[in-house]
Length: 316
Length: 295
Image (cartoon, rainbow over all chains, first blue to last red; front, side, top):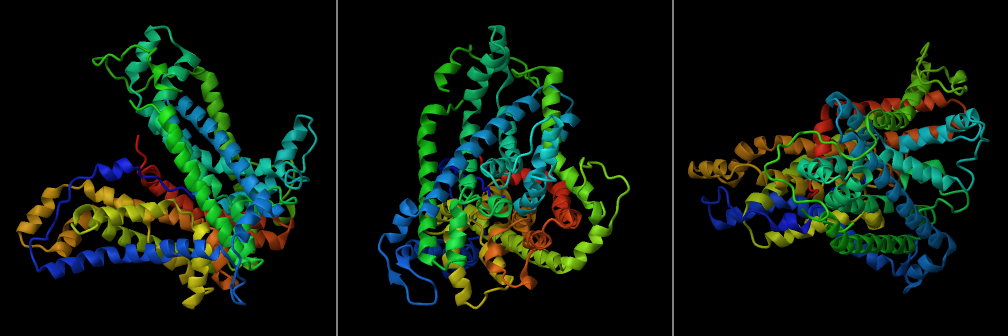
């Protein structure tokens, strides 16, 4: 699971005012020492393993370096590669296309299923569906991809066998133009449970009266979904979109195990280029540049979504 | 969809009784359950096929039509996994890495979360904002400098290379801060009056009460790092330092198409601890995944 929940600025702002505990006793230096000891592991750890590496990555992106010989200043060459080098360029286009298709599919599937589950049904059945859709999240993407490689095998795969049952010809899923579609399907199969969970929570928060009132007015079915469910679930939608976009932009495990980026560069992703540039071709500067561009992309898209949300998100 | 759309609906009556389950607008009754059952079958299908196929003898592992219910189970693939890869060592490595990370995250996150929630110090808001800001940075962006750092301090190709950078946790810190904020202040005040210092108040009053929150941090860390593939792929060079996902992918590579059932037996074995966590910790895991998501 590559998802981490996103706290909002609101959370940070609505904190209770500082309230000290147990600080009545002891001299000031002692209290300061205690605070330092509480924070040191986390602050030092994050500083050494996240903050400094970010700065180092940005710096490294301007160099050509193979770890063995001395680094050589490269100016913006590594960044230019992202736009010009066919493999790097392709990997970014693939990643962006993947994010658009996979996130759209994930949101549609999980919202649809959440709406279905939210309705009248025995509670054991609801629990059953919730557990089933949640289940793939606990599996490793690598194991899932191993299994899916067999299922999508051209010659003895179960998927092609099902196709043959309805008289369709088999497809070379992993070695043709279909491979990107398989990557999307495998990814969405594993991830939709997460957004499903968010939507189940979001739908439960919609007061029932609104539906009853609109039913009295004669609104049913699709119209109710469009005028009530969608606007009222839009805050959840924003969170679901932001988090699934961030996690989809980092896709690596599935295409690595399923296709190794092939055929050609058709399923190569940005993270795969980071891995290959650094640890296969020993081009650490280029890998850093790709990482920096990816980070900028994540921050840019996230900021954009929050901006757009002002127009589309309705808070009750 | 904009807010104006909602105005077409009349204002909700404040006094209306709230029924727990509403009638949302969708296909009714049977259609709905059929759609959900198909979705459930598609979700569980690959898992059931995996378990079933892992119970076929290696020679018969890829027969069509596919088998979904194991008849006449053959456990020899499970024995063969242990012969073809060092399953014991892989499991031990995974357990060690995941266990130390989980415990490390629980402890450090509890300490930092408590400081951010309940202790007063200069720059508290700023430090906390800094910690939160790192949550959005994916590990792939920082992997090259971390790799160099690990090399620099001589931890290349050790399990510590996987463990150390994963212990400080921004998300866990956030989670624990929220948890401590939810605990009553009066307990600490009482302890303070009784003469307890900062550490004493934390260790004997608040830390025990925060154990459920720490469990969420631990379960999340377990689920994520047990399944982690990217960092082990980079940091584990010799096979003795492989973790389970890495070992399984290389096992699949070695075998080609020879014996699916052996590879799948490995997959099933690696799933068992995750499954235990799923059964025991489904609720806290769900709570942790959706924590911090404001409505």
